[in-house]
Amino acid sequence: MNIPNDLLIDWVIVVVDDEEDSLMVAEIILNAYGAVLYTARNGSEALELIRRARPHFVISDLSMPILDGWGLIHEMKRDLAVADIPVIALTAHAMSGDRERAMAAGFHNYLTKPLTVETFIQDLVNLLVDIPELAAELNI
Image (cartoon, rainbow, N blue to C red):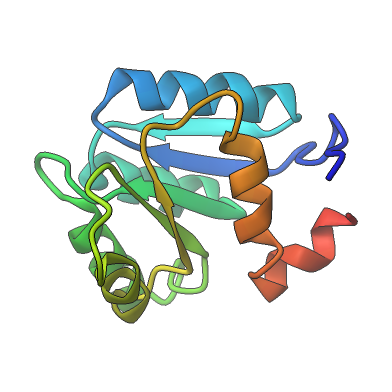
């Protein structure tokens, strides 16, 4: 699929990860496609950002200090102001049953690390088209 460079123009996205490499790859690629990106290093920081920025969607690591991705999705689902924002889980520990567990917890989908420049945007677009409230805006 040929992905237009302006695919995510003016989309507000929050990426949450305690690993600098993942944040850097996400930042470079999402900015290249026009997104307005906010990053956080733990779920507690992310929750404040999400409430303030009201992003189109969130990509959150599952394993982080202070408040992990499981805690973040739990807190978001309890807060009606942000409960409807799609969240994609991100983890390096992809094991059988993890995707199902993430979906059952309220995540909309699941990405595995490491994030790479070669595959990240394609993998992300494949996930976004499965989220009805975002697919309509993608125009692809």
